[in-house]
Image 1 (cartoon, rainbow, N blue to C red):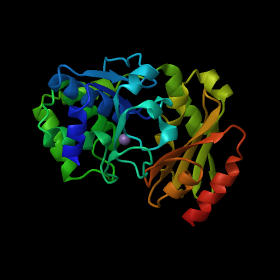
Image 2 (cartoon, protein in one colour):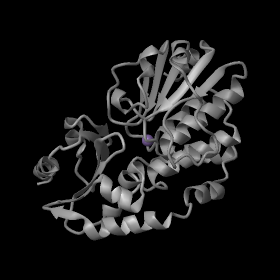
Image 3 (cartoon, helix red, strand yellow):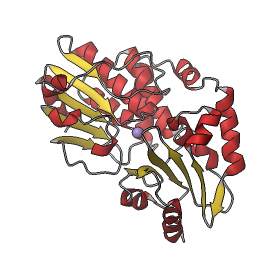
Image 4 (tube, rainbow, N blue to C red):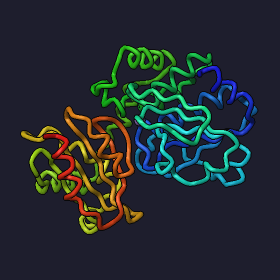
Length: 309
Ligand SMILES: [Mn+2]
């Protein structure tokens, strides 16, 4: 599979690299890591970055302005998602060819080349493995981006996907020049005062029903604390971990695009099927979905409690 992907890259002069919308460190880091590595090796190829931006972009590199015409001429590489409704826009439909590299538990239906390793800590782990297997040099900028991505998704080698291979890849990245103290410092920026206070709001206002802790964040609360939708949902979900007597925790957030985002987390029991029932996806213990505004969230909580019983 590595060889096939390598040949596909070789045979295209124009390459667009994207990842899921509302990018986290793994999405951004994989995207930029692959970008810097390919750019460094294939000097005559045009390589473009596309996708929505948020404050997880600590990489000092902005996305490009990419048109539908660009897509029509390009090989598209999609990272860290295999699900069409999780892409930043619909232009993937026009791409000449598509490669997917992902570690989520979904089966893609729209690509001829997909490398999916659902047991991997991060997409960056499999991007690093691909680069090493293909003898593509990993320049320092790429090493830092990929290292941050692995750290972000594994929560510093804490989560279940962390294996000997994760450490091998991290080791290779440090050998390639990743400055890990600088990377940690980048990830640990001070938080805005209102962001901190918003965390307090969550801790003071969450609900518990049977085995599920949850909170519903509406737009009004977001505007009082002036927090972005991505911070309120993904950025704060860990605030509800470790509550005695619970098995799972959820944050429902009214998003800027007028959907409700649900972040699902579970301590032990897979809840992925429940996320998938609502059109979402992800991992067994950490997944997400989008719901139309006005959805009765009690139904989801009841369904989850059934599962956890
Ligand atoms: Mn990921």
